[in-house]
Image 1: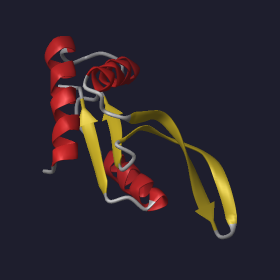
Image 2: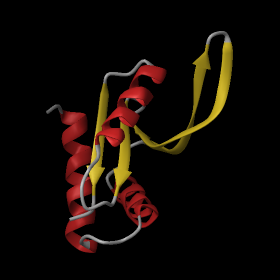
Image 3: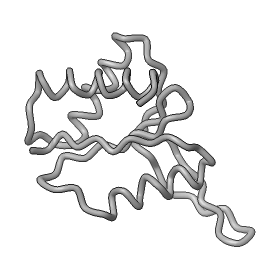
Image 4: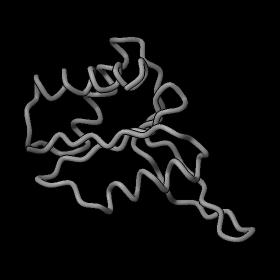
Length: 108
């Protein structure tokens, strides 16, 4: 783990500690963004992502958070993480040419 991801995970743990499991992903996203603001952690919320198909740019993808301009954060609130969620984060990283991503589950 590096300093950037440590800060993100620490903020997520604080959100989970206060709110607990079982809420909607949008609530955790809002709370996490507020926690980032309190900690002066720069982030972009619901960042639009272009996907290139051959020579065509296809719009419509959005990632939950881009933190520090280089860490993709995908938020889930599910009982069990499915492989498709990991694939989703990996596709975001590939599309944005980034190397770090976190899949944070506020579920059980």
